[in-house]
Image 1 (cartoon, helix red, strand yellow):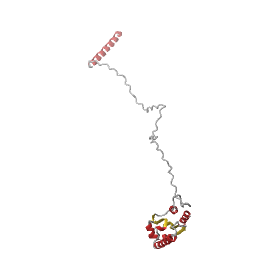
Image 2 (image 1 turned 180 degrees about the horizontal axis):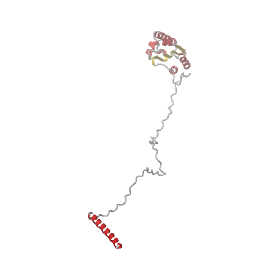
Image 3 (image 1 turned 90 degrees about the vertical axis):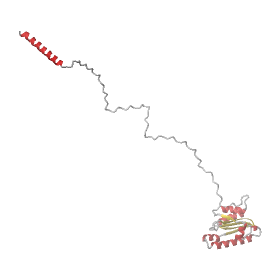
Image 4 (image 1 turned 180 degrees about the vertical axis):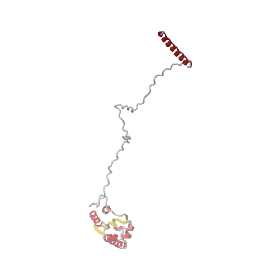
Length: 229
């Protein structure tokens, strides 16, 4: 009897468990629960924590130098101008040649030599002024050059002439009168100019005569002698 009773108890237990499960299942939603379809695994993209390596430039590509200055196209070079200046005119000689140049009289040659000096501005003596200042008539002269200063603070003065035959004494007297008048004029005015007047030069060579009031007195005498000999 013991061997038959044990299976009955087991059967009773199994039945009780079935009823219990049925009772519990009655409370459940009769609608069958759809099977969950597993979503395909999403592959998460993991951001790498390390800085991606910079791809290297091809070996034949040069990296531009950002510090190098940008070359600006240069304008075409201008044609260089010649640096040499035309040769200057030769300076006038300080002394007249010993003989007058062809076509120039001895009187003009004397003045050409004197005018090479640094002199003040002059006015030419015409016949009327020559007579008024010197008491000399142009009719007594073959040729002459007369120069008086343009400004009233200069005493520099020249008279160069070729005198007609027999008129030299008359001309020299006129020159002496002019020199005396200049002394009277400058002795009350400018002592430096008076000194020039007092150191005047009166020279003759044949029919040629020169009266000079100048700081270059000795030089102009040499010029006169060279040109009239």
